[in-house]
Each structure stands twice: as C-alpha cells, then as structure tokens.
Image (tube, rainbow, N blue to C red):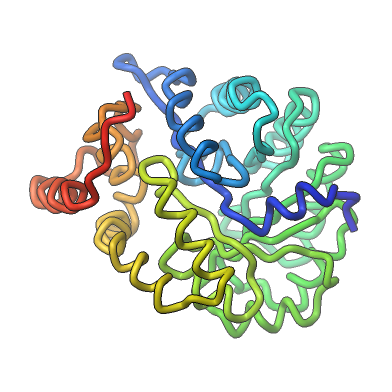
Length: 305
C-alpha cells in the first residue's frame, strides 16, 4: 500500500478536475492559458487538478509536450492543491514521464489503461509495476476505462504497493462493488465517468468523481459533490440534469466531441484554449454549437477572461 498522506487521500475522495491542454494559433501548446481555469477551479473548491488526462488530449500530445504541460501546471498551481500527472503509452514513455513527474514535484501519477490491442492481464500488472517503480514513491492512481481484465486482476493491481486509488471509468457499478469488496480497504475508488455517473458509482462505494466540467463551471461540480456527500440524491440529480445536455454533446460522434465540447464552451466564456487536435472533432457542428450556446446562456456563467 502506498504511503499516501492523509491530505492527499482525502483529496482523492473529492473532485479530480481534468484540465484541457491549450493550443495557440500555430498548434503549439500554450500552458499559460490554463492559469484562469486553474485559479477558478481552485477557488471553487476543486480538490485535485489532473494534467495529461483524456480531457487533456493526452494521446494527441507528443511526449515532450506532455512533459512540458506537466511542469508548467505544477508551477502554476504552486502547491495550492495536489497535481496528478497522467502517464501512459509505451512502457518506456510512461516510465520517463513518471520519473519526470517525481522530479518536477507532482503529487502523484495517474496510469492510463494501455490502449494496445494485445494487453494481457498479467502484462498489465507488469506494466503498472514498472511505471510505479519509475515514479519512485509517488502515489499511483490507476485509470481503468473497461473491466474486461476481470475483477481478480483489478484486485491484484490494487495490491501493488504504490497504488493508492483507482479511477473507475466503466459503466458497471456492480463490478465496481465486487472490486471494492476484494481490494485493500485503504484504496480510494473514484468515479471516473464524471458527474452524470457519480450517484450510481458513489452508491456502491466510489468516493468523489472526475470532471471535465470544472474547466467551465467548477462551482456546479462542487455543489454536486456536496449534495452526494450529504446523501441529498434528489438535489444531486437536479444539479446533474442542468448539465446533462453538455455531457450529451460531449458523448456524440463516438465520444469524439468530448473535449471539443469543453473547448467550445471555453471559447464562449472568453477563455479560448484553441481547437482540439485530430482525430477529435473540430469544431462542433452548427447544430451542436447552437445547442451548447442555448444551454450556457441558461447557466448564466460570466466570462473569466
């Protein structure tokens, strides 16, 4: 079991805000454009900021870009909240970024589930062990996007000493419940399907949730978390219904507008972080854009730039 601090463990049970990666007009990373987004999220009460997650377009970034975004984020956050860095792709790339995370002062790493078509359960265990060793004592959050590796393997992954938590991003609450039952009780299980799935996953033992909405409207995410913690499920669902259309837009085109919706919304509130990179869709279709504009008008969010 990881020697994760009480403070970081408590933060894992809150909101893990997944930051976008800003690009400039020349399609180069523009880290400073994150500053107002991070400041707003921290001021609203978001517990952890995550860079190089899927909302960060991790798989569209070169290794050097992912490293630079991590270093810039750690510096700009300036110890106000924990920063978790996503690592992944080939085992050598993941280990290199894990080592860089330690050197840069990140508070932990999130290990992406490898998208390789030939992932074996025991090979995944070897992968996580090597990456965890490279992180040299940093707490590890596993990112599981599907549960096809089986509950036994998931439980074995949580027994790796550095593993402090699991971001469960599969729409299978009962399998999550089985995994929680079999794992070390000190492991923190985080709902990894954002606000809309938070009530179902929290009901079986997840604590807190990940969010891309925090780039736009962190106050709403925090309000949903507070309602769930108070077991006010009707209130939580009322708040979630206000953002359902936003998440619906993000899930369209085979989930290819997931980050597109976030970046389009950022443009609408005056915090332009550039377009998404292919193979994500850009821009939103005219119909999607009109739906987003109507939705956000109802939200009444002021510009943050």
